[in-house]
Image 1: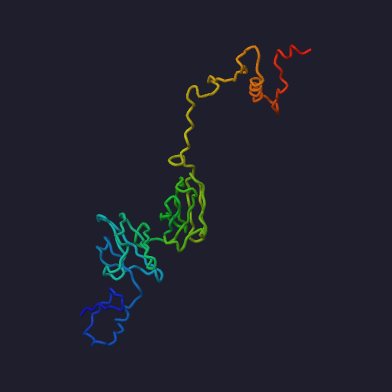
Image 2: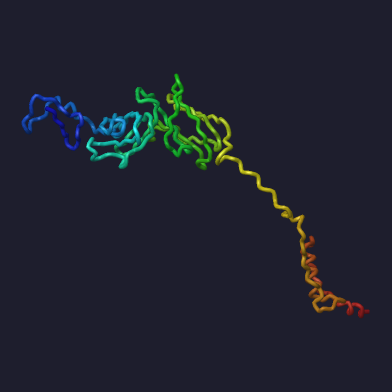
Length: 288
């Protein structure tokens, strides 16, 4: 008969045994049954396996991985399921993807999911991801250089961030990323970035300046409209009359003081020339 074993709080999906009979209640499990007791497991469920259960490979005690190919199905998507019974699955809503092959990672501690595009799920090569300001610190797979341990990618830094920079990430989960500090580059520049997985060396070679989009140069200011130059304008100066008493034959002391002050404003004299000893014309004529 077929028996589904429930080991504590874990449902073991491959614990079905074909046995000759049933053990009496309370009798210990056979050695064959105990061989199926494994560590915590998580399962891929989605359109590639018709929402069945595909055990993910344990990378560490809390991280799991699987490679899946999405093709020939409308609305490709998936979830990660804990007990294979939908009692605990992530994310809350199906994770949509485009057609293609992906290395899918799941962190059981944080419940975070990473999706990395790969060329194929059959013997997929080691991949490294570009992460930086141009792609919003997402993951963009680098292209392996045949016959070497290097990976390459061409990236445009075009004012996506005031401080253009990047890192190279191995698993897309920041557990192994280089360099220790962000690699800083110049803005409005296209770079070919090469990473050596063996030496962990990074080179960023500028390919040329970017002069379009946000990096396009500002247009020259428009010429001033006709007559905008003050030299082409008519300028009027208003002068205060010096004849306060209405008699044009003689200036008053107050009027002459005001006129002198205005003249002084346009002069190089350091102090204002006061005319305190001014005497009217008739007074000067009467003096001996």
